[in-house]
Length: 136
Image (cartoon, rainbow, N blue to C red; front, side):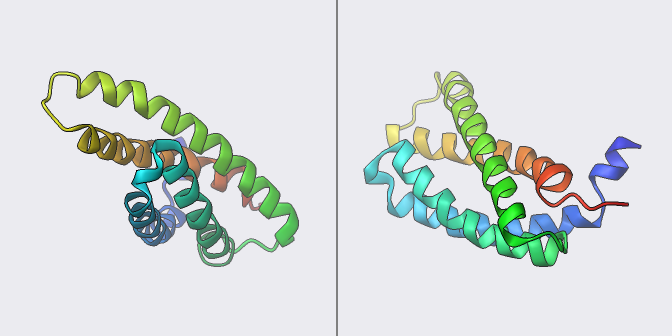
């Protein structure tokens, strides 16, 4: 029952918005990779988060809550999910890739992709049940 509630039609819309977000974020991360792991991912996610907020507020969840209130909740969820996902991605991917002979650049790229997956799952849950929660 919880899975059905979690994976309703808003999840598909969230994924569609996520495709746009992911493309924007990934292109920015890779363009800015010379800045390092944290600066490139932070800048990319700040830009992607702005796009995501407006698309999710108006398209995915159709929230009528004020932009300020939902924006603050959205920003809190994005920050928590970003820090959680990318902090966890580094040690997990580092451990998993330890014995695979990859250049440092490719190790970092794969780590970022892993972080994106974690971020997507945690962010959807936070947006659905907190930032854009609808009253029923």
